[in-house]
Image (tube, rainbow, N blue to C red):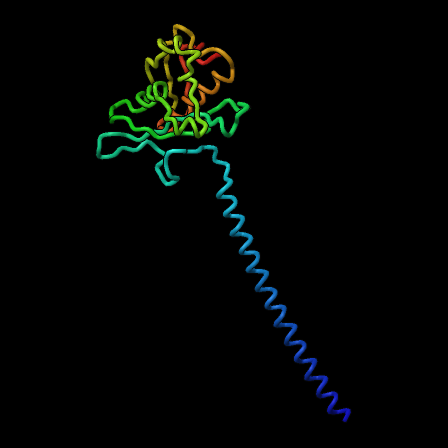
Length: 207
């Protein structure tokens, strides 16, 4: 009788050990699956909350981010603006958003792009999105009439932009001036030949 009980106990113990081992394997597998799910969720969250500040309200994310030409004889370029919906208090006085526009092909695409930035009119949809342009400010309309880009010279990655500003349109408040310079800087730097932007004369875009 005692022998039978020992056998039964040994069988029970063996079954318990096997079940415990199987349970550990299942828990390990579930833990690995959980870790994988957490990792995938983290990647998804990172993709949604990435630190790229540029927002494009008019096109899909897979559109090209560099000036590109097409058979129709035009070039797609980016014009940079500030999105006030993201910063209504204007704490950051710099551009953080771009819209696409097209310009005719020419031998001076950078110059043409900057001139378009100065003259471009935002659409009502873009304004509703939160974009605004100091170059469209009616309070400075008279001073803007004679403000123009005279030339662009590129040398060793440095683009020197020379402006004519007889009425001091580019002056008047550090945040306003900083925003205009930032818009032009980012718009110019989309061209691969430019690493740095400078301005002439020395007092242009100064508060």
